[in-house]
Image: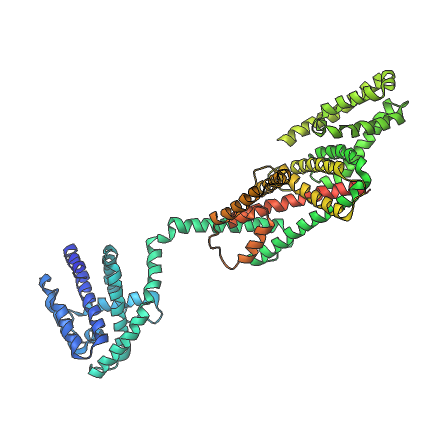
Length: 394
Length: 158
């Protein structure tokens, strides 16, 4: 503390108020501590000693005034006393000290009463604050001292503002109250630390920012999920929303299980239809690339496909309608063995040609033109197919 | 659908893959299925649906990666009965969990959080933010899956 004091002395010769402030600070801190421990005469003597210790450093004229303040304190050992009694020279100084203490108290506790605040003192306060902010190393110790001091002044002003004489009994009373106050002081720096942190801009360091960004992300995704999950809009609160999301996911999974169960039950009857469906499903799926609602388009396109095929058959293959239909069935069910190539429409046509040639050579030979025409008619289909295949690959 | 990617393409791919898998399963089917066979078949179809959905989505999502890895591991496990592989897999899951500790998230969402992690595949090793986005995508894909499966079922039952 003494080194800090010396530093302060070296630092600011013009800031006399600041120096006196810190001197008083220290001594009041010491005084407070000793007042808590000892009784009447002890603290005063020690206070005087504390006042004498830094005195060699102070070669200014106001050190005498300062000592006078301390002598007043020797009598009363309270700052309100010094406030009320001293002549006009010391009054601003002491007032500044008390004002500063009050400011610190009022920053974190509601018990402080700003009765004696005035513009002039505020100017002093700001000066002191600057000094405090500039002095980094001793700040915390000084803060504790300030708080102790301010508490003492508070206490004393509350208890002794009515009394004019400082008796020993009162002094001891103040001391005992000071011990209580000290216990309060221990939690006060925390709140003050937060204020200091916010003032210095430490709340904007990387960790806080990252946490903030993370929280924003979470809330944004929650909002997104809220849109996705039906019936989630009414619920406010994260926990309820999460519950709803969990329920929804579970219901979807159960639905999938149920559907697979149904499919397992239904398949044995219709296994031959499977491949047929696959072709149709491909068509549906591909055509449903364009419309937004595939569930209804499924049946639609399915019907379209059937009618188109029938139209082809009806128009160009009148004579061989029945065999053609059976053949189409078979050709469609043929690609089971090669499902990958079968997905390609050109391959489908080739396979159709092959099966045509293999199975129904006689019809094919006679109705070659019709076969060509069907393949040509199916060209738009294939074009669509390929386009959609490309889309799907993308 | 208001998805950034083309949802129907995912649907299409899922339908194709799922039907292929069904075809394979149909080939393997015995002529007189017992109750156990039916259950096994149901399970297989469900697994096929999950796997084909995951492969339709691809590897860009964590949940689909997890499903694919699980499928591949299962396949390997069934083809080559190897206990050591299983043990290593379990170890990896534990390490993933340890490697990504969940930082304190606000409030008491601990249990809901864990339930959701259990529901979304591969959710054990995610942080909360990631888990939410994966859940959103997973929900979308489940919806598409259900739609396609319903269509297939409708087609076969009529």
